[in-house]
Length: 392
Ligand SMILES: Nc1ncnc2c1ncn2[C@@H]1O[C@H](COP(=O)(O)OP(=O)(O)O)[C@@H](O)[C@H]1O
Ligand SMILES: [Mg+2]
Image (cartoon, rainbow, N blue to C red; front, side):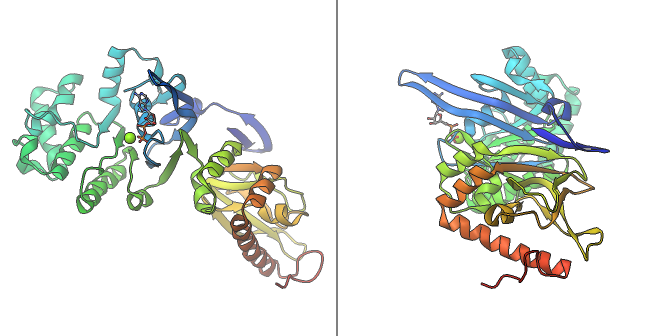
């Protein structure tokens, strides 16, 4: 990703490595090719994904889109054909089997669709197992800790039952308690509610929300789009590629293959706090979609100083007015001074192709552009350059 605007040196550009910035989960150009008798199949095509501490990320996408393959790269259950997988600073793709198991036992809690509890052990024994494997805690502490975790997921009274003696929802709660055994910073779950009725699914989901509030970082594959709405970020996989999440929301009219194509053309850029993205009077040559943080829109009033008229945050876009109508930027856009911003930028040529491909997209952008121009005009207290306000 390109970074623009070092503190005190606005406009300075540099490319920097994601490791130094310390993403908790960092996948870079991950490719996974399955070889089988039937031939080669590429399940992940150059996937880049960064997840930061404290995020609750949902991974959605059609069956066969590569969700489980992606999860298996992060847990080290499977290895990439090429690319890097760095989790909590560890290059997972380079670990040998033994080191992998030790690392996984401490760094990750993994939750599966079919619970994967050992059927002959009681729930509390299942929860103690990862502590035994990792050699963490004394035997007495393991028991106390397991009981505490079962209590936390509402299962203390079932501690001495075997999995078959409790319901599916309870088994999944026990599996979550097991995933928490070694207090890992990250929970990874592959369709954890896929085998539960919707009410039970919601209560299990709420448990994940609680865990996020307690500081866990969560990556969850889900089929349930209602649940996916409630998380802090959604990643859409299509045909082994990640679709820029906001693109799909902003332009619901685009087909999946259009989304994949445009996602590939987007350039991620990070602007440090206060960095100027578009200066009033310049001729912008890109369309910007905000993926994190905020921007501030500044208007010059009566030839005086610029002041902030509004802020925009993730999922909103800017630069479209000038690209659609030509001419100079009517407002200055800068990265919010308190937070900075990350955007996905699309070059003019590609933006024009996008708009010409789909009338619905053009209309959606036009509508936003109209509203925004009206706000700017009202805020600056005068008609835009070039004369009369538009009438449609
Ligand atoms: N071990 C494997 N060998 C060959 N192909 C596989 C293997 N695992 C998964 N695939 C294929 O890779 C694609 C993605 O699978 P998967 O990641 O399980 O998708 P999802 O979890 O989104 O349903 C599918 O087309 C699947 O058939
Ligand atoms: Mg799957």
